Image (cartoon, rainbow, N blue to C red; front, side, top):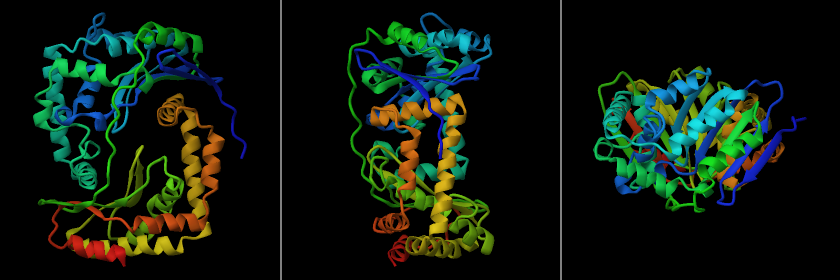
Length: 424
């Protein structure tokens, strides 16, 4: 496979801040952003939901710009601006024409270094997030995901919902926001990335201007997470059961990471997968069913997700678990080749837009401290053989299960019975 040769440039400031750009010929726009290696799992006990609130408050005014001015400065040149919070990082991004790169970097630098966290704006945005939390409670297919992770990692920051809880969100102050920024938004845990019609020197100049005088430092590191497993059932009068069944997965640093990803793809990553064919096509037990593997820096969780009628609960569980066990023993060369092709398409499709490229580059710098060439990733996928993929599936089955379910649950098998069937 012949892969395009990327045009990367990388600069690291004396304080540890990394800047990476990738020029893309024939592209008129630039996607750029600031990634911080701190997210929901970096929050202390009383800070649950703070990183997400901080992301919201970033656009609510700075010492130089009002909230309206932030929006207008970007949109006057046809651009857009956004932010996102995950378990392990937070990012602030923009997309503009290449000629407006300096403006976009000025706006991002302004909101990250000079936000005022006005109390009136804070109160307003607090209300928005409380509505967001309430919306999840009303959406069982979203809520079951929060319950699933919380059950897999009980009593740990990794297991807490990113949005926070009403009681914590209601208590946050402007000083709490400033304190989180001062503690975690440190140069050695930050990377500025831009791709498209980009001038590397323009990006470096902005980095020097906004962050060059910030003292070196990485801030505290989140405590290690430990998968536990268990069950959480919410009996509700819904039309169907929303369920996730999980097992301990792998960190993206683990040597079995790629084999586990490929196993999940074979099991339930597409409509040709075993789960889809057995559950949906042959038996009609669920409208959709999938298998997934969520890796983190020091742990991971594997799972199966579906929605089905109450009367099909036992049949679904029997078929899903039997299919999981059988796949771990009989996965074929043809299935693995198909999964590899699907994974490679997913990897390469991310290269087709500037936005996809900056996310990939930022995550790699935060995770590995270097850009991982695409050919290296493809080689790692190709190196996985059938026996390694089967072994990854068998290894999953040695862990304690996690069960999260919402809806009419009277016919759903007991946890002990599910665990016993998984063990065989």
